Amino acid sequence: MQVMYVSRPLAAVIKVTGRDRVQFLQGMITNDASGPIPDTGLRAFHLDNKGAIVYPMTLHSTSDALYVDIEGADGSDVIAALDHYLVMERCALHNALGSSESYWLLGNICDLFVDAVFTTDGNLHVVRIGDVQVYALPVLRRDGPCFVVWSTNGELPSILEAAGAIAGTFDDAETERLFAGIPAGCQDFTKVLAMESGIVPSAISFSKGCYIGQEITARIDARGRTHRELVILDLPAAVDTLDVTAGNIVVGHIRSNIRLSNGHSIAVCHLRHEARNETLVVGTVTVFGVRDVL
Image 1: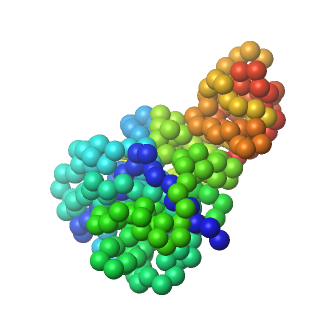
Image 2: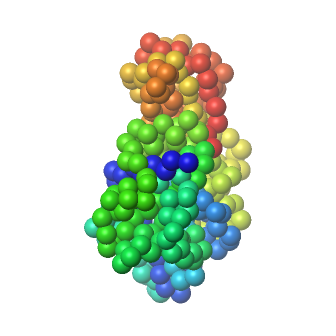
């Protein structure tokens, strides 16, 4: 099967080390960093004190570190934001990418580097090709295998192409993501309440200790409802405005979208609950489907 690589336009991979790394992140994120980590990483949010999402992330673990992958944020900005909360904990935050660029690998990395030397530590895969090391973390970003890959000591695109991968575009990656119904990155999640994310069961733990924004999140959970939620809209034409209306009233706002080769479009929308079963219009285009995010 053909494997495609796509450059990530803005992304951060933060490596958290030290004996208190789990304790520190427990106080920073919505999910339980002390529990088992899924094969595609643990989805979580870093919130502000009003329960709104600042950074959506995927958390990975190894024997001596935790890796935090964030789409749509600069690594130095993330480190500065989290370092502000480091007081007595014995842990350190490192920019794992350094000055390197990271890529999505759409396909199975094992199919690409069949003759290379693989080592695996928790969620982190390291592929040695001569003197070059390629690092890979699995992520949920398509209906099939997907990895975030980077290398700090080699030109990764030439390495990937030599192994048989083809270069793709950002739109290629977005098409696969939105077709699968997966919200991702700061564009979809930032300033949305965690309880409105549409992925509460996989991104929020209600049995862990305190974290920033927990009080508001728990209060909304106890109330049993939110006013809005992220959903996927299916449209028969291109998106020409970000406002979603029902009866000429704005009921939602599109966060990201892509036009498919057949002329249809798919969008992530922050939509009011009561409008879900109404006739929704985006500009002059009538929405023909509303579905849950994954």
